[in-house]
Image (cartoon, rainbow, N blue to C red):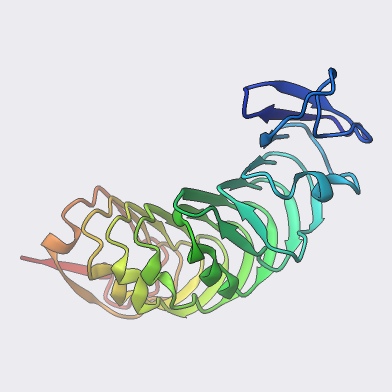
Length: 244
């Protein structure tokens, strides 16, 4: 494999780094403080053995649209923006922490991550998460009730996994949420998303196991412009009855 990477420093310097290259200085021996790693769209199927030793401390990492397989390191990744989408990563949800006082984004969509997503509860210890995309993986079980500190979250995509049970009550505290996709799971109750999500514009409930009929004050979803519920198992048809 040709281990060639595109790296951007805090001085907007673009480097081509190959396996064995001493990351940390330029050709003149001057120190570099690297912040960005972008190896998207490179058709990589694996990473060199030295990769995480060199780059695990970078706050901005984009590995999207490759064919990278294998599990993610067990140690926590300190991150601001992480995009692993459209790869073949497998194993449990990676452990993350966010930079203090910053807005972070995490996109793990279209991989083969599996198991519980409970570790996500530790993400917001210091920073704030704005986007979380876990869609098109193999996650299962119930969604943990730990979204009370995720108030800056504007987009949450849990679609096309195997989540089940009821949505946690803390989802109702996502006052900044604009996009929520739950499609392609086994959710049986979604009551709490109608509490305080007045900014919600996009809601996809398709292909779940909803069996209830929800009476929702129209003012609670006054910003809604897209609603999908095809394939829900609600016996009464349309699962939401808007009332004034």
